[in-house]
Image 1 (cartoon, one colour):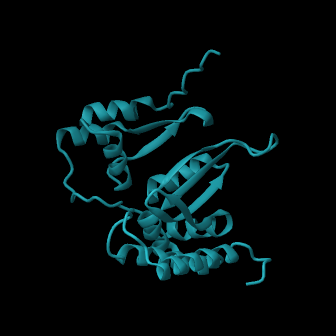
Image 2 (spheres, one colour):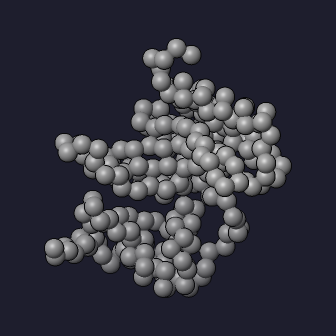
Image 3 (tube, one colour):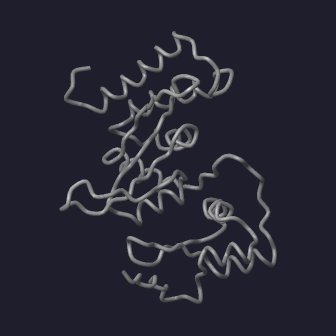
Length: 224
């Protein structure tokens, strides 16, 4: 099957493919996206929904080649989201999102992870969420033939914690789940040791209780 070429932006002179920006700035794709999250590079997606291509501002790239921007080096996510965006996203997440605590068995014992996810057919919207708040998104196959194509956004652990702390004041439906998830992740962060350390039975029991509480809240018709 012959692949169709990607749709070029109408104002192609103002936008640069991310691969070209990487070469000019001598940066990785991750580095480019970090500058996008910090608001140092404007970006847009072009092309058909099933094969979107990421472009960044040509002028901003050229300016940064001439004079690299000064910003503090950080290892954690830089979340650059204004209050109005956070209020909007909180409502979006209240209606379409999901909060869960997952556990799975590994060679060194039970592993735990807090995750927030949001599936939707509005691909551009989820890409904007990913750009502004962080997290990851990917395409999800149709669950049924008559369903629309979907994309699912998700954030886990400390990344999800930061986002929940930002939107918590504006949540109206999932505020109880958010409080439990925040409490869970804060406790995970302050626990001594690392992911391979043995977890005491009392701690395991507490984590199971938190998981079950969130699961019950996610099923409003089930008695608590």
